[in-house]
Image (cartoon, rainbow, N blue to C red; front, top):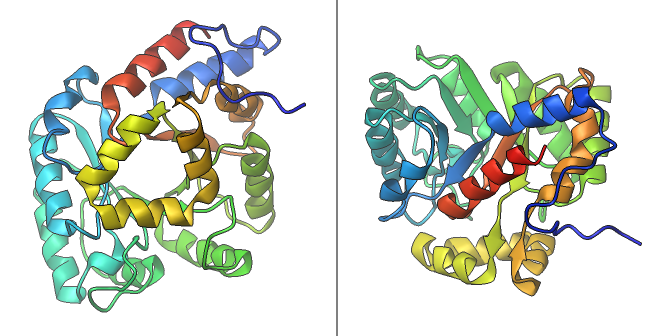
Length: 294
């Protein structure tokens, strides 16, 4: 029988895990950072995070990249280590890219994330992250880290072969990868084995579903734009089913099942990128509780 993904609140981590594995798990959770949508209320709610925490700011097709840049500027001024998403499909052309870099170069930002983007149609010249990354390599910038998206599970419209080919090509222009959210540790581990076998050596940040409730997910969907939320749920049916059919999801078991691989250098798992759906307070509370039980 498959283990339930929803661990009981406050339950201790598997006592059969070795001390080395528990230490790796604790370290990965200390370094874990959240991804937020740029909404009107989110900034004031980030006070629950520790000073100097990393925060990733997404790039919404409905709000545009300027909203991402504006929020990145404000959060950087508050002392957060901001990782702005520069979605390729939201960048108009090479001159626009240069203008974006100029804004970011004025900030204490050392890491950016370059996905293709969720827009159905590109606003300009870039239809893929690879195209933007190639142009980005021609410009001077202050980033020591450039991240790219990766997909352990099948993409709704792109074949696994194309995804792997793109990942191999993007590796030349990047320093780390972040996986799309996945609920199955076995799928994640098998996928990492596969890409390592094809020569992809980038450190992996595992996309972790945060603590999510159906009601808060729906409220967040309204705030980020109906088009964004419907597109996301349509393209990620398994995620939608798990989030909408249960009252609350907690990723305790997923983390415990991933734990044995965190200390193995072959997998080169650097940490966790938490998709919190803007439930920052609840997710941060869970993270601290989880660490207390390791």
